[in-house]
Amino acid sequence: MFGQSKFPSTPVSQPNQSEAAKSLFGENYAGGDNLFVTLKELGQMLQMIVYEYEELERNFMKMLVEVNACDDVLRDTKQRVFELVENVNSVEKKKDRIRADIEFLETQEKEMDELTAELEKAVGVSEWTDGSQVKLNSSLVPPTKADNQRQHMMQMQVGLDAQIKQASDDLAEILDQIAGLLALTPGSTGEDQEELNSALDQVRNILDYQITALQSINEIEMDVAKKFAVMEERLESERKLH
Image 1 (cartoon, one colour):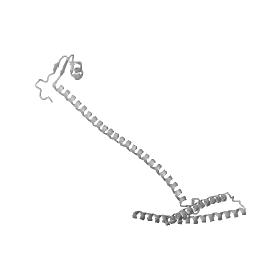
Image 2 (cartoon, helix red, strand yellow):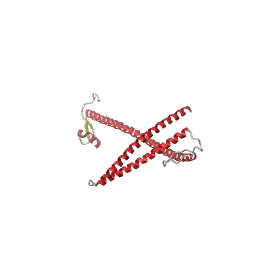
Image 3 (cartoon, helix red, strand yellow):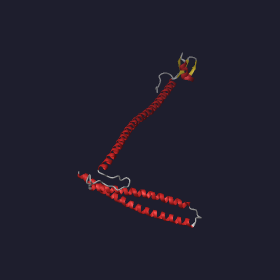
Image 4 (cartoon, one colour):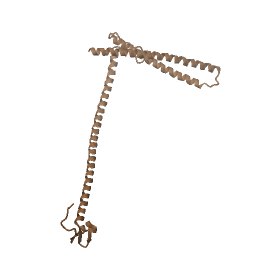
Protein backbone atom coordinates (compact mmCIF):
# COMPACT_ATOMS: atom_id res chain seq x y z
CA MET A 1 0.00 0.00 0.00
CA PHE A 2 2.82 2.37 0.88
CA GLY A 3 5.47 0.83 -1.44
CA GLN A 4 9.01 0.19 -0.40
CA SER A 5 9.99 2.22 2.58
CA LYS A 6 13.34 4.01 2.51
CA PHE A 7 13.59 3.65 6.23
CA PRO A 8 14.59 0.48 7.95
CA SER A 9 11.79 -1.73 9.18
CA THR A 10 12.70 -1.15 12.76
CA PRO A 11 10.43 -0.11 15.58
CA VAL A 12 9.95 3.60 15.89
CA SER A 13 9.82 5.02 19.35
CA GLN A 14 7.12 7.61 20.06
CA PRO A 15 7.60 8.88 23.60
CA ASN A 16 5.01 10.53 25.78
CA GLN A 17 1.84 9.08 24.01
CA SER A 18 -1.62 9.47 25.50
CA GLU A 19 -3.84 6.78 26.96
CA ALA A 20 -5.92 6.90 23.73
CA ALA A 21 -2.91 5.72 21.76
CA LYS A 22 -2.31 3.03 24.34
CA SER A 23 -5.84 1.68 23.93
CA LEU A 24 -5.62 1.97 20.12
CA PHE A 25 -2.46 -0.09 19.61
CA GLY A 26 -3.11 -2.53 22.44
CA GLU A 27 -0.49 -5.26 22.63
CA ASN A 28 1.85 -3.25 20.37
CA TYR A 29 2.28 -0.93 23.28
CA ALA A 30 5.44 -2.09 25.08
CA GLY A 31 4.83 -0.31 28.31
CA GLY A 32 5.57 3.08 29.80
CA ASP A 33 5.15 6.03 27.50
CA ASN A 34 7.00 4.44 24.56
CA LEU A 35 4.86 3.19 21.64
CA PHE A 36 6.56 0.83 19.21
CA VAL A 37 4.87 0.18 15.80
CA THR A 38 6.27 -0.64 12.41
CA LEU A 39 5.21 1.02 9.17
CA LYS A 40 3.74 -2.32 8.05
CA GLU A 41 1.57 -2.56 11.15
CA LEU A 42 0.56 1.05 10.73
CA GLY A 43 -0.47 0.36 7.12
CA GLN A 44 -2.52 -2.66 8.21
CA MET A 45 -4.27 -0.56 10.80
CA LEU A 46 -5.07 2.12 8.25
CA GLN A 47 -6.37 -0.52 5.83
CA MET A 48 -8.62 -1.92 8.57
CA ILE A 49 -9.93 1.55 9.37
CA VAL A 50 -10.60 2.23 5.68
CA TYR A 51 -12.35 -1.15 5.30
CA GLU A 52 -14.57 -0.50 8.33
CA TYR A 53 -15.38 2.97 7.05
CA GLU A 54 -16.34 1.60 3.62
CA GLU A 55 -18.48 -1.11 5.28
CA LEU A 56 -20.25 1.51 7.35
CA GLU A 57 -20.75 3.61 4.24
CA ARG A 58 -22.29 0.64 2.35
CA ASN A 59 -24.62 -0.12 5.26
CA PHE A 60 -25.59 3.53 5.47
CA MET A 61 -26.36 3.68 1.74
CA LYS A 62 -28.39 0.47 2.00
CA MET A 63 -30.40 1.88 4.89
CA LEU A 64 -30.80 5.13 2.98
CA VAL A 65 -32.29 3.24 0.00
CA GLU A 66 -34.71 1.43 2.32
CA VAL A 67 -35.73 4.70 3.96
CA ASN A 68 -36.32 6.28 0.54
CA ALA A 69 -38.45 3.27 -0.49
CA CYS A 70 -40.49 3.55 2.72
CA ASP A 71 -40.89 7.25 2.11
CA ASP A 72 -42.20 6.58 -1.41
CA VAL A 73 -44.69 4.05 -0.02
CA LEU A 74 -45.86 6.55 2.59
CA ARG A 75 -46.27 9.26 -0.01
CA ASP A 76 -48.26 6.92 -2.27
CA THR A 77 -50.44 5.78 0.64
CA LYS A 78 -51.05 9.37 1.67
CA GLN A 79 -52.11 10.24 -1.88
CA ARG A 80 -54.48 7.29 -2.00
CA VAL A 81 -56.00 8.29 1.33
CA PHE A 82 -56.61 11.79 -0.02
CA GLU A 83 -58.24 10.34 -3.14
CA LEU A 84 -60.38 8.03 -1.02
CA VAL A 85 -61.54 10.94 1.12
CA GLU A 86 -62.43 12.89 -2.01
CA ASN A 87 -64.36 9.92 -3.39
CA VAL A 88 -66.26 9.50 -0.12
CA ASN A 89 -67.16 13.18 -0.10
CA SER A 90 -68.30 12.92 -3.71
CA VAL A 91 -70.46 9.89 -2.91
CA GLU A 92 -72.00 11.72 0.05
CA LYS A 93 -72.87 14.66 -2.19
CA LYS A 94 -74.37 12.34 -4.81
CA LYS A 95 -76.37 10.56 -2.11
CA ASP A 96 -77.76 13.87 -0.92
CA ARG A 97 -78.69 14.83 -4.49
CA ILE A 98 -80.36 11.46 -5.07
CA ARG A 99 -82.30 11.77 -1.81
CA ALA A 100 -83.47 15.22 -2.84
CA ASP A 101 -84.45 13.92 -6.30
CA ILE A 102 -86.42 11.05 -4.73
CA GLU A 103 -88.26 13.44 -2.43
CA PHE A 104 -89.01 15.67 -5.41
CA LEU A 105 -90.31 12.72 -7.44
CA GLU A 106 -92.48 11.58 -4.56
CA THR A 107 -93.95 15.06 -4.32
CA GLN A 108 -94.55 15.12 -8.08
CA GLU A 109 -96.15 11.68 -7.95
CA LYS A 110 -98.48 12.78 -5.17
CA GLU A 111 -99.45 15.89 -7.13
CA MET A 112 -100.01 13.80 -10.27
CA ASP A 113 -102.27 11.42 -8.35
CA GLU A 114 -104.30 14.34 -7.04
CA LEU A 115 -104.56 15.88 -10.52
CA THR A 116 -105.52 12.51 -12.03
CA ALA A 117 -108.25 12.04 -9.43
CA GLU A 118 -109.59 15.53 -10.17
CA LEU A 119 -109.48 14.90 -13.93
CA GLU A 120 -111.31 11.58 -13.55
CA LYS A 121 -113.99 13.31 -11.54
CA ALA A 122 -114.15 16.11 -14.12
CA VAL A 123 -114.72 13.72 -17.04
CA GLY A 124 -117.14 11.62 -14.98
CA VAL A 125 -115.10 8.48 -14.39
CA SER A 126 -116.91 6.41 -11.80
CA GLU A 127 -115.23 4.91 -8.75
CA TRP A 128 -113.99 1.55 -9.95
CA THR A 129 -111.65 0.42 -7.17
CA ASP A 130 -114.56 -1.15 -5.30
CA GLY A 131 -115.31 -3.53 -8.18
CA SER A 132 -118.13 -1.53 -9.73
CA GLN A 133 -118.66 -1.00 -13.44
CA VAL A 134 -116.23 1.46 -15.00
CA LYS A 135 -118.09 4.22 -16.83
CA LEU A 136 -117.17 7.43 -18.58
CA ASN A 137 -119.51 10.41 -18.65
CA SER A 138 -119.92 10.88 -22.38
CA SER A 139 -122.20 13.88 -21.87
CA LEU A 140 -119.28 16.05 -20.80
CA VAL A 141 -116.56 14.95 -23.21
CA PRO A 142 -117.14 12.68 -26.19
CA PRO A 143 -115.07 9.54 -25.56
CA THR A 144 -112.29 8.82 -27.99
CA LYS A 145 -110.97 5.43 -29.04
CA ALA A 146 -108.21 5.72 -26.46
CA ASP A 147 -110.82 6.48 -23.77
CA ASN A 148 -112.78 3.39 -24.71
CA GLN A 149 -109.65 1.25 -24.61
CA ARG A 150 -108.72 2.73 -21.23
CA GLN A 151 -112.23 2.04 -19.94
CA HIS A 152 -112.04 -1.55 -21.18
CA MET A 153 -108.64 -2.11 -19.59
CA MET A 154 -109.80 -0.62 -16.30
CA GLN A 155 -112.82 -2.88 -16.36
CA MET A 156 -110.57 -5.87 -16.99
CA GLN A 157 -108.46 -4.85 -14.01
CA VAL A 158 -111.61 -4.65 -11.89
CA GLY A 159 -112.54 -8.15 -13.03
CA LEU A 160 -109.09 -9.46 -12.19
CA ASP A 161 -109.23 -7.92 -8.73
CA ALA A 162 -112.64 -9.46 -8.11
CA GLN A 163 -111.48 -12.90 -9.26
CA ILE A 164 -108.35 -12.73 -7.12
CA LYS A 165 -110.44 -11.75 -4.09
CA GLN A 166 -112.85 -14.59 -4.78
CA ALA A 167 -109.95 -17.02 -5.11
CA SER A 168 -108.57 -15.88 -1.76
CA ASP A 169 -111.97 -16.36 -0.10
CA ASP A 170 -112.33 -19.81 -1.65
CA LEU A 171 -108.91 -20.86 -0.44
CA ALA A 172 -109.82 -19.73 3.07
CA GLU A 173 -112.98 -21.81 2.85
CA ILE A 174 -110.97 -24.83 1.68
CA LEU A 175 -108.66 -24.48 4.66
CA ASP A 176 -111.68 -24.40 6.97
CA GLN A 177 -113.09 -27.53 5.32
CA ILE A 178 -109.78 -29.35 5.68
CA ALA A 179 -109.55 -28.35 9.32
CA GLY A 180 -113.03 -29.78 9.86
CA LEU A 181 -112.06 -33.02 8.14
CA LEU A 182 -109.00 -33.39 10.30
CA ALA A 183 -111.17 -32.93 13.39
CA LEU A 184 -113.29 -36.01 12.58
CA THR A 185 -112.35 -39.13 14.52
CA PRO A 186 -111.93 -42.58 12.95
CA GLY A 187 -114.96 -43.89 14.91
CA SER A 188 -117.45 -41.52 13.29
CA THR A 189 -121.10 -42.45 12.63
CA GLY A 190 -122.91 -42.71 9.32
CA GLU A 191 -124.07 -39.12 9.54
CA ASP A 192 -120.50 -38.03 10.11
CA GLN A 193 -119.45 -40.01 7.04
CA GLU A 194 -122.10 -38.30 4.95
CA GLU A 195 -120.91 -34.96 6.24
CA LEU A 196 -117.37 -35.94 5.33
CA ASN A 197 -118.37 -36.89 1.79
CA SER A 198 -120.31 -33.66 1.41
CA ALA A 199 -117.33 -31.65 2.58
CA LEU A 200 -115.07 -33.47 0.14
CA ASP A 201 -117.47 -32.70 -2.70
CA GLN A 202 -117.47 -29.04 -1.73
CA VAL A 203 -113.68 -28.98 -1.68
CA ARG A 204 -113.60 -30.67 -5.09
CA ASN A 205 -116.05 -28.17 -6.55
CA ILE A 206 -114.13 -25.24 -5.11
CA LEU A 207 -110.87 -26.56 -6.55
CA ASP A 208 -112.47 -27.03 -9.96
CA TYR A 209 -113.75 -23.47 -9.82
CA GLN A 210 -110.32 -22.24 -8.80
CA ILE A 211 -108.67 -23.97 -11.76
CA THR A 212 -111.22 -22.43 -14.13
CA ALA A 213 -110.75 -18.99 -12.55
CA LEU A 214 -106.97 -19.21 -12.80
CA GLN A 215 -107.21 -20.17 -16.47
CA SER A 216 -109.52 -17.22 -17.07
CA ILE A 217 -107.17 -14.87 -15.23
CA ASN A 218 -104.26 -16.15 -17.32
CA GLU A 219 -106.18 -15.52 -20.55
CA ILE A 220 -107.17 -12.03 -19.44
CA GLU A 221 -103.60 -11.28 -18.45
CA MET A 222 -102.33 -12.36 -21.86
CA ASP A 223 -105.00 -10.23 -23.53
CA VAL A 224 -104.02 -7.19 -21.47
CA ALA A 225 -100.34 -7.76 -22.27
CA LYS A 226 -101.11 -7.88 -25.99
CA LYS A 227 -103.12 -4.67 -25.82
CA PHE A 228 -100.35 -2.95 -23.91
CA ALA A 229 -97.88 -4.05 -26.58
CA VAL A 230 -100.12 -2.69 -29.34
CA MET A 231 -100.53 0.61 -27.55
CA GLU A 232 -96.80 0.85 -26.94
CA GLU A 233 -96.06 0.27 -30.63
CA ARG A 234 -98.64 2.88 -31.59
CA LEU A 235 -97.21 5.45 -29.20
CA GLU A 236 -93.70 4.71 -30.44
CA SER A 237 -94.74 5.21 -34.06
CA GLU A 238 -96.50 8.49 -33.20
CA ARG A 239 -93.42 9.65 -31.30
CA LYS A 240 -91.26 8.97 -34.35
CA LEU A 241 -93.65 10.92 -36.58
CA HIS A 242 -93.49 13.94 -34.30
